[in-house]
Image (tube, rainbow, N blue to C red; front, side):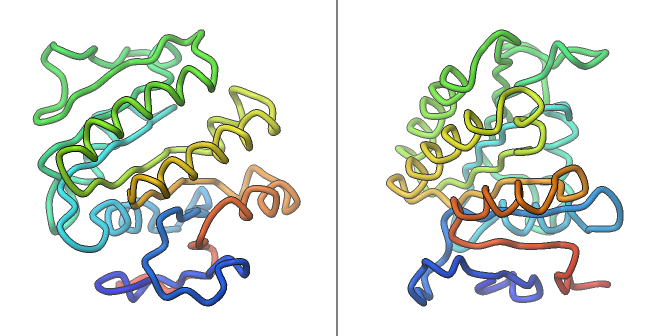
Length: 209
């Protein structure tokens, strides 16, 4: 990775034609155990330059749990954080809806459990547009593996194909978590083609190891 993320090994999509620009869409392959996933997520989320606005899409983990990853980073939480909570109804304690006493300094929108991927994409687009209009923005999707539990592989692929294109047009720096422990190599290879770069924490050299 460029800049202050140089301790993380990143492979570039071979179709990237040797570009040295900061990759806008990064797939983060993070196994279940011992992967430094939260540390690397924090690095990617803060991104290059002055990116103090962030959008987080979370499925199985609560907004507060994902926001803690940002807070624990040495640069602290982005000044303007928005969380789209996809699976609030699946957890024992539902996420706090927007407008109530939720995580501090963050807007949380819970998505109806019946919402399909097209509807989820519309919610993401709405929040991205609002954040991008105010400044440099980063996006974290946690996770592709969880989305694959909600919908068929073809539908998730199409969803990410549209989202990565939106990210590229908007100049957002985005990363997408995927657990390689729960997918076969063919599935991982299928999704890798959508991204500019891949960070594989099974082999990456992360500072502090």
